[in-house]
Length: 289
Image (cartoon, rainbow, N blue to C red; front, top):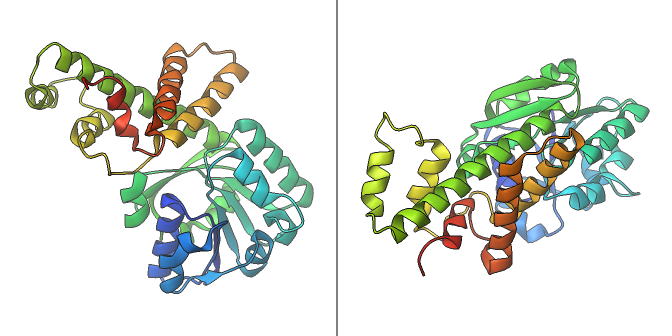
């Protein structure tokens, strides 16, 4: 069996590590804070001291960190992923990143003839923990096909979008739509409450099968708005993804006004100390105090 390397210990990275372990794979882990990977280490994962050493030890390396800066720090430098890579390994980024950085990373790997995929994830905490993630892949299809058996341990669907950076382009579009739905639902809840409507009834009628607004994201906002400790996707990371999506829109000369407004609202939520709360808690910007 191929050896798996996981860089990062957030919700998605830890879920992937656990499912690789459950399926009998040897899993190597590195994270800036070792304690955050404690559960995986107690379940048999092997700790590595640097991304370079991890890359040397594993056959498939999956980086899943927070943003461009964190990603650069683990790929580059004397102790980075690229310093430990070789042509037979498959290198993957599963973080949500800017197109510019993924393009740069693609070119760095091409120069060394390294196999590289951009493979952002979707499926939230439940998908990560249950092994039912959806993988959104850009890169050479032959490279993807060479590891489909291993990826089955963490995902129930794999979507191939084309050459490198294609997966990231789709992920930024997807996250934009999810956040716009959540923000719209939150504002509608605020309006309904101020208009004196019973929110339980509003929810029940909206989710009648014939009603158009009943998207999964809208449903999640109604379901989780009174559960502040629930965490799937933190507002601070939603806001970061929306900034990256805005950069993408600007690169393609697209005036995506709903995206612009939603990013501004999530920035307000982050400034209001809601950054570590779940996406659904954007509702607190609009509800009556």
